[in-house]
Image (tube, rainbow, N blue to C red; front, side, top):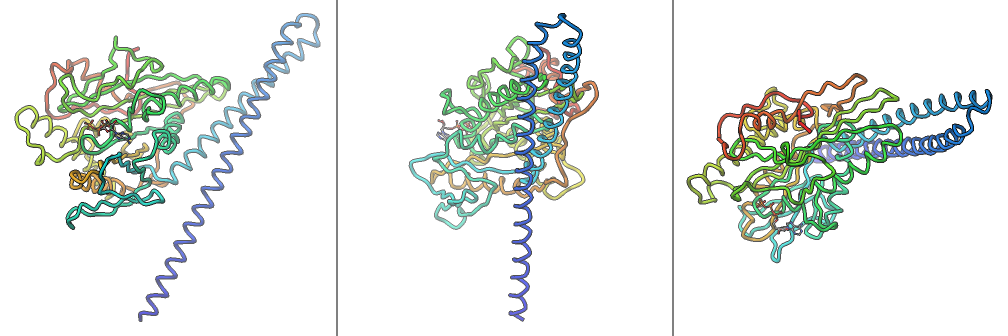
Length: 446
Ligand SMILES: Nc1ncnc2c1ncn2[C@@H]1O[C@H](COP(=O)(O)OP(=O)(O)OP(=O)(O)O)[C@@H](O)[C@H]1O
């Protein structure tokens, strides 16, 4: 009997090993194909540049005779064909990039441990797990995540792991990155970081990567339109800190100055939204993606925060948003027919990313100091629940790409509407969320 069980277990283990090996082979094959496509696109790009140079030279001497005019015509047509080929190469690269991202799952969780003089947290050396040992059995636990960054990990190392999702937003996907954790655990450090170039967090690095890529893609004929919002969610009201007159030009955003706390220092959720529209005339392609970078308010439990009055109301609203976020993730994890996105402004605003059409990555930030062990366990349990959501290639993310003229259905109309209807800081009110349906870009005024 026992022998039979051992045999069956080893058979299952062998099958799983084979499955893992097959998946690894698929990832390797997709990576190789992606590389080959990129190289081919680059070659074509170089050739295109060369031909354009020749074309310019010919234009200087054109008029001298019919032969040259013919040659010019042929070259113009050749350039057009090559532009088309480059565009098609880019489309293939996008598809392969997406296959790679989806193989890793459309909802992922990374854990980041901040530095602290004393610590009850240990990170596994392979970066896949974390253990909390606060002494008593009730404050102990071991958790696995897609990635665990120890206290010594640099901002660059962290960004390297999320850069592919930033690329996905450029490729036409709805992407959302959260930082979750108790006050002081390093959420703002992860998202915004410090002003120094080494200290910069995910927001300024993402903006820089996107601007660089947009510049490179101008060469093969892509034109991009970027619009940014910086939404603050406070007591279930939304405000766009980059509203008209406050500067919406992405290139000029100094994110380090962006505000995480309300006017009088009250805690808020803040969401940096970047709406990306790319047009490629030679292939008549339109892509519409969005990158949402969310710095959540501290997650500490209300019972522990001894607050009353206005502070209590704020804490209730924060708890409501975060518990709504938890409810959305548990509905997704259990593949429930109804996902309660509309229970809070935060989840309603981020519905396109959290649902089947988007890609989500959550950072759980933890403070390893002994006094925070209980709160750290709560954060890690929440993150483990999010980690249980499986939305791989099958339930997959959807890319917003079309061959038609742009018809934007607009994401943060909610914020825009709130703004128009006077939901500014002075009029903030708690209440039932009234976020209109939206899908991709907000109707933002330049
Ligand atoms: N990985 C890190 N490396 C170095 N310093 C860090 C790191 N994480 C956090 N810190 C520092 O710890 C302090 C608290 O971090 P931070 O403000 O990011 O916390 P938070 O979770 O955003 O808190 P709050 O909820 O109040 O906004 C800051 O001084 C920050 O610079």
